[in-house]
Length: 322
Figure 1 (cartoon, helix red, strand yellow):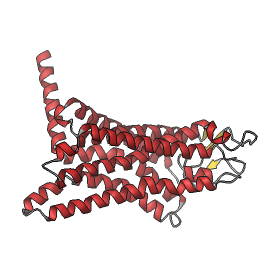
Figure 2: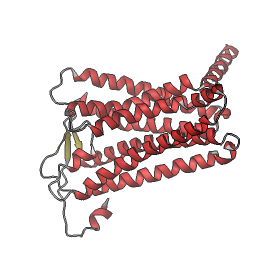
Figure 3: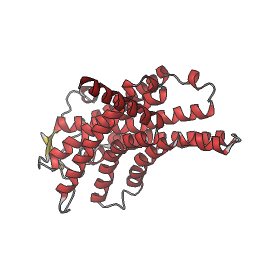
Figure 4: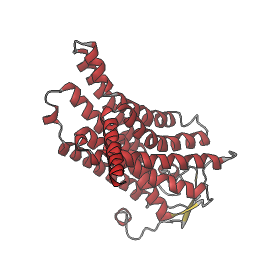
């Protein structure tokens, strides 16, 4: 981050506090039960996403572009939950409200990068679905594992660079007003507003990030489903339409779970109480990693068959060992 500061001039000094205080909820009773709930959500998320990753890795039949994207989503969900929930539990469940300056910047970077990648992974899955339905005969040549890996890698580069810029711009701010962050983690929007010097670049990046990682991915996904709807309208058989659309239900479920709470928070932020905003954002951060593996296990026939096959093989191995 020294690049951002040196670019502004060597003689400029910034006031960086040794720590920030995460305020969390204001005046709500029995909050420890909510954090215990987050703990159980985290455990189930870790187990579920690890199981999905293991099944895709072990079953050669799942080495397809679609499941490359599903594997990536499970990995991002696992990484994002691990970056967020243990730190949140440490802060609020064990009353360690102060977070060092460097830890806060690191915390922010990993949380925002994983949130960005969750949206971009949904774009990768929508790309796979639209190509599979619109070009079924040429799907295997148009979409390959290498192409999907390259697409996801480019998304990682975009997310990392964008969030590094956001964190880098924060390091040029002087925090002489307050060190209390009115959120449940080191929230970019709440953080730059504490600065007492010019925070206009931070305000701009704060508007650009949602545009790039929320509204633009959502627009691409909705456009892809318009294309899918048009392609299905050309299919004569109702049964074929239903069968093709059924392959999209798991992805549509993930899109709704991820985007709806965040959009509500962003569009109604001025009317939502700070506590409501924190609950909305925290649930939007932890529920998709919990529900994504459940949705794919329940709604995706290939994963169900693969899991049954793996469990059956393990049972046979145990019987042979006895």
